[in-house]
Structure formats: structure tokens, C-alpha cells
Length: 229
Length: 257
Ligand SMILES: Nc1ncnc2c1ncn2[C@@H]1O[C@H](COP(=O)(O)OP(=O)(O)OP(=O)(O)O)[C@@H](O)[C@H]1O
Ligand SMILES: [Mg+2]
Image (cartoon, rainbow over all chains, first blue to last red; front, side, top):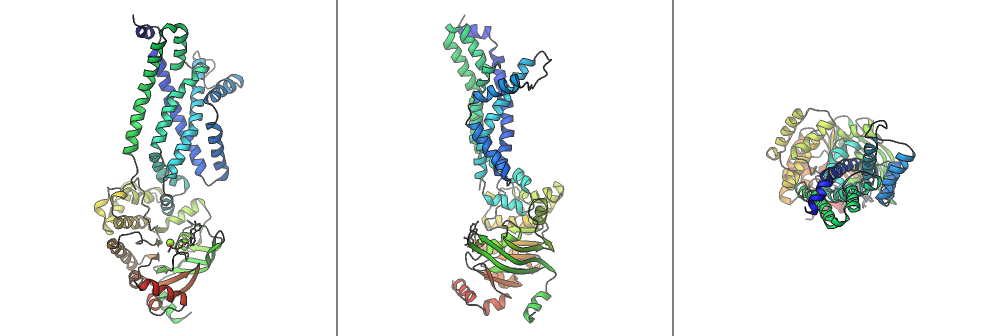
């Protein structure tokens, strides 16, 4: 029996990568939402919001993800007892650590999304927003209908890079016991250390399968959706 | 009130845009100096002046794309609101056509026209589209409705921009050098649309160096220099008999080529 079969037989490889996929999808959605809010704060005419946006990006982007994950899981969840799942449910530990993991990933990558979007906003000529205001759109609708759609299109490439980084960064939540791919890898290395090269091969292949299509999709999208001026 | 002034005003209605004691600085530069100006309903005013004299700033101040330092601007009797919804509502009544067209690059020609009517005026999309098509026909680009702005010529883009302003049923339209960015062969197609609008009774404030348009369509010429309104007159009087040295100097420069 090859090492490959042994590992697939003893470990739920697909299950672990499925958790990675879920972390990626929820984390990315959260990051996109929060990042958009932060980017909007940074371009808003309100001084306090601008400052909040700038602080958020500087603070979060320069903090190691491991620290944010630990803060969420150990600090906020374990010590302050803020739970994101029902403590009486029998899947509490799994659900709670997964959800806090998603929050940490979303918050961390929101800072990168915000920066990507802000650079996207800078590619939109000021005349676009002026024309929108001139037909009577106020700040919110101007952003929603005119500036942000163009900013997203201008930011597709950096957003794609952020998504790829996010996919790989989900491995950090293994440290707080979320049973995703990297968590499985630690177990494999511990109990099947003779199969080290197989383990690495499975992990590398798994992540390439997850990230390669993302890269291709975003390259295609960025050509397809480019705004012609 | 002098006789010639009474004559021009007879053709037009109530005061619509009134600027009174308007001042604006960019840093130490005093770009608008004690501007007094009244534009009546149905009137077409052409603003002339050398580069840097404050024409664009004046235009942009009227729909508050630029704030002013002191003085008041009223539109149809209502002072320009500071910010927020009230300002947005007022801007919907003041159309603006830019030198660089500024069509929404990610929207089709039709969507460019319908955005305001749908989001600001609350029209149903079908209603807005129908109206938009009528306007596009009127400015001669009905067959371009599904294209994106970048696929149109400059002249076509500017006519779409005029249709976009018209779609809001504005009380007044501001034009800031609408033909300056155009290739010469496209200037007339845009001016023709503007002349038609003018003769249809639209109130217009037009910054332009097109003397032909001023002569044909303007009720009044306002001459600016260094942030001040130096001279105001009918086009005929202004072009044939300028009262100030600055106006004479300006006219000699633009009429010499
Ligand atoms: N945002 C700004 N910041 C600083 N100075 C400005 C700004 N906008 C315009 N100015 C200056 O204000 C003066 C008037 O500018 P404005 O654009 O109103 O002139 P204009 O009459 O429209 O000129 P042109 O014929 O070149 O368009 C110019 O000296 C210009 O450099
Ligand atoms: Mg100008």
C-alpha cells in the first residue's frame, strides 16, 4: 500500500480541505464586507470615520495574523467568554472555534481588501463622482452606483491576490484547534512521520487546487470587467 | 435700469439663479470677487474670459461642486443648502455638462441617462428608459443606446451628456466649455443641440469660447477677468462695442484667429 493510500485511508483529507474551503469562503465574504466599509470610511467626508479607517488598516495590517487569531480565540472567546455558538450544543467547541477563526481571518484580510479598494477608488476620475453629484445623487448612492462599481473593477487583481493569500492564511487557525488542512497535516506528521514527503505532496496539491482556479478566474475577470475610458 | 437691459429682460422671466456678493479663495488666490449675477428663467447667458479668470469655478459654485467663502447663491428663490439630501435635491434641478463629458464609464449610454431619473426622481425603469430613448433621439444618438461611452466619439459622448442632464428636467443647465475637448469637426453637432435647447426656452449658463454660439443663442454675455465680472451686455453690443480695455484685449486675442 502506498503512502498515499495510507494517508487517505487514515485521515479525512477531503473533510479537512472542506473546512479550509469553508473558512476561505466565509472569511473572504466577511473581509469583503468589512473591507468595503473601511474603504468607504477612508473616503468619506467625515473626519472621525476617515481616522477610524486609517487606524484600522494600519493597526490590523501590521499585526501578525497568529496574534489576531489568538486574541479572538483565547482572549475574547476563552477568557472573556464571548461565544459565537450555543454553549449547550454538543458541537459547541468545533462551531465556536470555527466561527472565531472566520472572524479573525475576515478582520485581518479586511485591511488588505480596504487598501485594494482604496487604490481602486483612486483609479476612478473625480469627474465621475462630480457627474453623479450633479444629477442629484448624494454621497451614498454616488459611491454605490458610480464610484464603487468602477473601483471594484479596478481592484480585481489585488483583490484576487488577497483572496489567494487568505486561502493559504486559513492554515493559521489550526493553532486554535480548527480541524482544517494544516491541523490535519500536524497530525499526519506526528503519527505518520515516515510519510513526510507524501504529506507535503498532498498539502501542496490541495492548496494549488484551491488557489490556482482563483488566480485564473481573477485574471480573466480583471480583463473581462476592465472599465474602458 | 438702463434701456438695453430692460429690453433683454423683457424676453425672459423671473430670476432663477441669483448670485450675490459671492467670494471664493483658493489659498491666497481670490478666484471669485464679489460676484453679482442674476440669470432669469429662459435666459441664455454666455460666460467669457481668459484662462484662469474663474469661469469654471463660477459654474461649479452654482451647483456647489465648489463651496464659496461668502455671499449667497439662490436657485429659484432657494439658497443652496450646505450638504446632504437638500443639496442633492437641489442639484437634481441644476444640470451640468462638463468639458470632459464625464459619462459613467461602466454604464451603457441608456443607463447613463436613466440612473438619475430612477434613483433620484423615482421613475420606474421602463418609464425612464422610454424617456431616455426620446432624449437620445432628440440629440441624435438614439442608435447608440446600448454602447458604452468609450465606444462613442467625443461629439456623441457630449450629446449623451446633454441628454443625461435633460433627463432630470432641470430648471437650468450649466455648460463648462462643452466643446473644448472635441475635435473641430464635432463641435457643431454639439453646438446645434445647444442652440436648439436655447431656442426651446431652456435656461442656460454657458462657458464657451464659441463666438458663433454666443451671437446666435445668447441673450447676454458676461465677461470675467481675474475673478471679477468686468462687463455684461448683449452679444452684439459686447462683440462690436466692448466697454473695457480688458474685454477689448480679450476679444482681439480670440477673434484674431
Ligand atoms: N482646486 C483648485 N485648487 C487651487 N486652485 C484652483 C483650483 N481650481 C482652480 N484653481 C485656480 O483658480 C483660478 C480660476 O480657475 P478656473 O478653472 O475657474 O478658471 P477658468 O476661467 O475656468 O479657466 P479656463 O479657461 O482655463 O478653464 C485659476 O487660477 C486656477 O488655477
Ligand atoms: Mg475652466
